[in-house]
Image 1: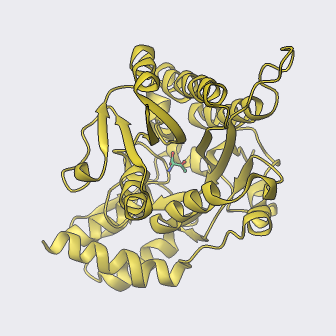
Image 2: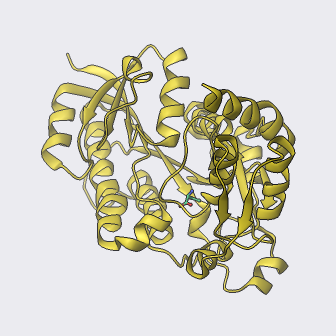
Image 3: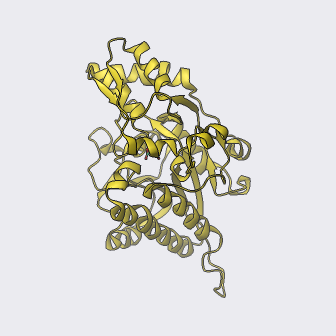
Length: 337
Ligand code: AKB
């Protein structure tokens, strides 16, 4: 008999590490992780790890021959800045990799006669505000508004949402016998900020980078203007959103894709909060015109009312609690070691 598992792709990344930690406390099923990198030593004992790529079809075939995959948290992706430097690689991982996993989940759903849950983190990068005036005039965007991403990553994520929705609703719609379809659920995340890992390859990274640099006593030149405002969320709430969403009955969901957010901050507000905790920090602003343009195309805030109504989404960390109870004490402790 195949072992029932929860598969986490991109598990060595920021969300993955936090998710494995949290999931391993409650989950009796095996946690199977897949990533190009090894898992960090403190997390490795909590999961069965496979080092490899989601684009490796023979590896995915091997997985389904050995395991019954019940849930997939598909976290593997090339983020927005990195994807601009390697757009073809980004498309391969973010789109073709996602397609391969959706196929796997669709086949598994049919084989076992029960939908595989496919949990997909999307991003505010799916939005593309045309200019700063429009961004200021529409500070809290609805899910369907301004879906004109300016980055490869944003375009990939938007298409990933649509592909997943297709596989869960219309897959093989012309077949004589309707297949058991997978159960696709996506959340659009704002910039996530973790106390335990530093980000890499994203464009919302200036917030966490500022904080980690200050705690390490290193100077930091912020690559966006002080007034730049986007939504953020503390990592425990990011993990909570994924776990809340996986646990809600399908009948409660009115859509496949949900905005989730916690608080919005300007880069200057971020700096003020970092300075309050680390008064010696040297934080300057040296905007990088092209990365600035990417963040300017993301909204100031996103309306997450549907998530609140359908599955009771509620962040536990507002801005005060994020900084005072989670980020500052944990980052201090981390670098004091
Ligand atoms: C990025 O900056 O690319 C990510 C995101 C907002 O999805 N952190």
